[in-house]
Length: 276
Image 1 (cartoon, rainbow, N blue to C red):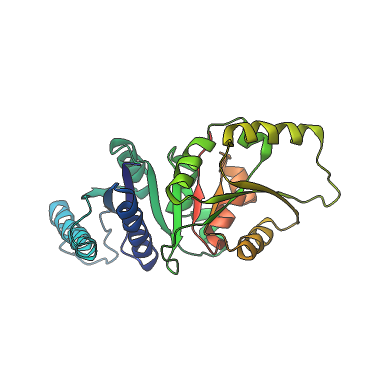
Image 2: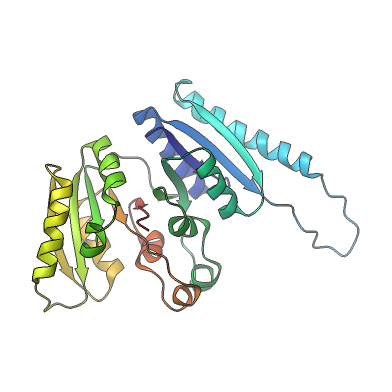
């Protein structure tokens, strides 16, 4: 891992994510790229208002971001390599462009809860990045502090996991902490027994994982998020890994994806490894 991108809007959740990203960089020797996206404010008054120029706005945001970089550097005694980038535009688009330009190996972004309208209609920058970016995205909320994940729960679709390259970045991240992988399959059918097809997919995954410490688990529940959170708590796992798939806008509106739901509800950092 060479480069970790941490976008921030200076909110408590983003600050937590930046701290998390800095700790990852410190432990892995990676370069930290701090990024902030701003937009031009639209006057809400009917009276004439003197607006600052784009250059003035940009300079103000650059100073704010540089202060954040200096705070982090002082914490790690100037041992981190930190770059700062400020862009004007739409957050998701600008972060996506910078992730490609900087060849980010991981994006660490803040996450906070939201109501029905915010989640279903407006969405969030972090959950959109999980769907859009091709590099892994780690979501961290304001209450989460860095702890090496001794156990990582992988909520997996067996067929999907065995036929994609998703295991490669997952195994690389796991190797950093020598974590034990808990491969979890959640079904809403309590009477479903493992059939020959599932056994074959497990064998494919076993061959890819090799000697990496891991174990298989199956749960039956009609509520995916509750079952997954309960399993994570029982196992005292440090991370959850999920593999988001692309959905059309109507599907996203009518039914929240498991990855998006867990991004809002997970009690530990959630790593989304894009598999498509």
